[in-house]
Length: 573
Image 1: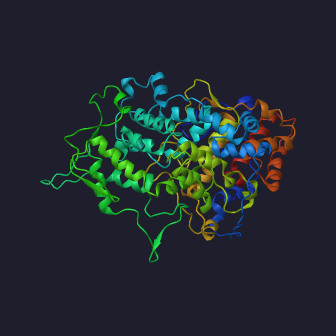
Image 2: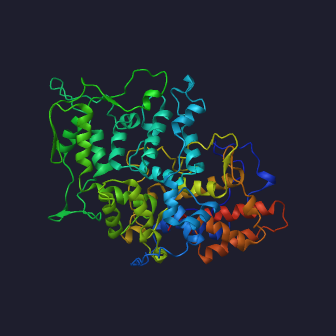
Image 3: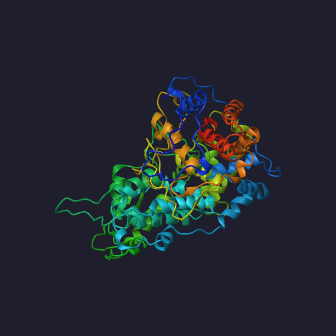
């Protein structure tokens, strides 16, 4: 870890950034206060691993009265969990409608399809057949600019559980294939989880990513066996997990050891069901077949009985009917409610939900109150309105919250300050580089295990000593921490490509450092910056005289960057 973090020159070394654009109005880079930068970078690396851990505060949550007015800080905190970033208008809307009302309004919002956007922008031209062009553009466009932000945020959570990464999809028209997959997740984000399981099972991108397209039944003569990849990951990662769970997410034990959820024989038998799934056409001149559900080639499908998880798909069952029976059996397993619920809580609210929190949400997953299992609308509402998500009393607990994902840190800035793309193409690109960009790019996981594992704990840290987990730290290290700051500095000042923020409103506060920092603190950090951090940021802002050239913009830039880099912001509470 370096002793300080400094702004890089305006001409960013990252080739993905348009360096021909000079800072607006002659704005210049301003160095960070070294002591503050050192503190924030060290904190973002989990305390450097050598610090002692504070005692974990066990706070009994108290329900927030439903009739109490929603404060601006509470609205901003809620939006940090339920969207890709708060805006002043969003905060006012939550205050006006209340948490539940805002959720209801968001669920009704329409969205544009990734697929349709790619078509409208000409990516069906034959020159793009072996390309990924357009994929990152439509992803950034939606998560930053779509008004249905709750659907977008839940869609990302689902995409990090039911993972497909574009680089692992070995198909022509890859941008369309994965766009169609993301459309499935977003279209079903407020639907039923059982329906979603069927839609991803018959999706071309998932079939390519987990290698079950053209999966063949066993051949006794050659000894060939069906591909087991999807059968295994469907149970391990998408529905059940490795160990039997109680409804509160705790692991069931027998003779001092965790109870296994399934066996290798369960995997092998289930794999027989997922044979014969193929694309419905051989026409690759257009991407259209990648949007349609897979179909069964009866010559490849296993016709014999398949027994797994205590159930049997009878011999002679038609292919799609066999798939549905298998998914029904898995969906009915008692592990599904706590396994899926806990991961959704982790993605939206906190890395270390209490057993009671998991249990409450899992109960809603099992029965939404009307006898429906897997109702994602009810589950999302339960997660976001739970007392552990909304109670201010928990903000001081060391076990509350999560590390903000790098993609979300970037979108927080973009949304807070009205970033738009002049040409409407959102050319932000792949931000996966951990040395020059964000160390994460939505839709580009290199593994079905996501960018980070839900149970990851950074070793030799105060987090590990406290017995907590922090999944996002799996992509967080000294290099990525510095890269984030160095990437955001020119992004804030110059934009990325033609994606530029609008600082008109915030610049109007720039002469008053207290008002400026308070506003940035509210919109980005839900008012959670400590007094020491606020003082350090104000000192940096006040180091730029109000009479200096382009003082208003430069003072705003430094307030925004230092807030984004602060430990209290990077930790979402």
